[in-house]
Length: 332
Ligand code: UT7
Image (cartoon, rainbow, N blue to C red; front, side, top):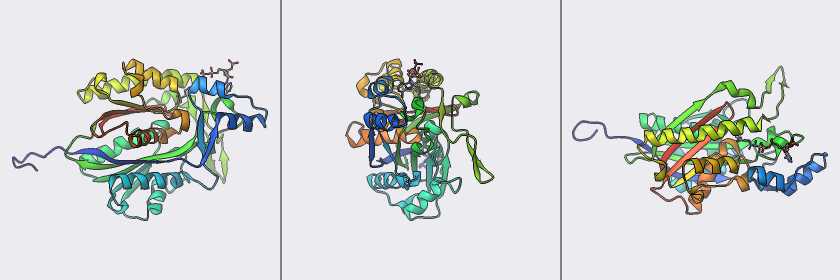
């Protein structure tokens, strides 16, 4: 409470970022060769021209999402100067959890060697990190948490059908993390989340586990063009909405970090926001689409390369299966 008896404002702020990519870097040429062995034709030219992707990383069979989340989280904790024991909340955004249950967040808690703090997963596919960040922000603002670890971690290679060239060339594995802390200074300024479940069918992995078996397809299916059209529309709209909520305009944005799925969607969004393309953070070329991990992986790359500096205004955006989308505007 302030001396006048009014509650002083409480915000959440990013204290540190981290990320991790599995060692196996697979270029488009490598992948084209692997697919050719099964009679599936693709090429570096097609993949680069349609998506901007040049390489992706694949986990080995022994590596689950929590194994990628652990080094990403440790790097974020170190950057924040926070011990894992100080966390009172862990949220992992993933659509490729280690198991049906317990949550990947609980498994990560165990691997971090701590216990007691709240831990749960958020499932919003490629919008997952923005969803998880928004939940953590609300919990910190409300006083329900003080220090939160928010992670996006995926092993999408597990759900790819390597006989379907329209999807298997697009995705990769990885993890990114941020530590959020309560702050009197504004960090996260505004967030907004959406879903429109009329479009569940255009991007889904419909299989489930029942009676000791996988029932339905365990592979990712996507109507790429339908997703493309929806993504382009919603990313501009939700960005403008969070800008308005925060009392900012598109000219104020220092860095745009959208979900890294396709360079054409990302550049289209930047142009609609009248942004210089050099303010767009791009990692899709090296990571492919890592679903919920893509935004925190790109944020960490931008921070560690010195592009995103303290005080910069950063727009994070997610879009993907559900159909889900959302944005978070923050002072880094
Ligand atoms: O993470 C959630 C968000 N996801 C997205 O944002 C993905 C959004 N969608 C996209 O990025 C694009 O729609 C794709 C990259 C998936 C596809 O690009 P496109 O320009 O929409 O291509 P298309 O699906 O229209 O396919 C064009 C042609 C087809 O051949 P025909 O019918 O014209 O003869 C495909 O069969 O390209 C063919 N094709 C390929 N050729 C070589 C499809 N995949 C491949 C491939 N290699 N891997």
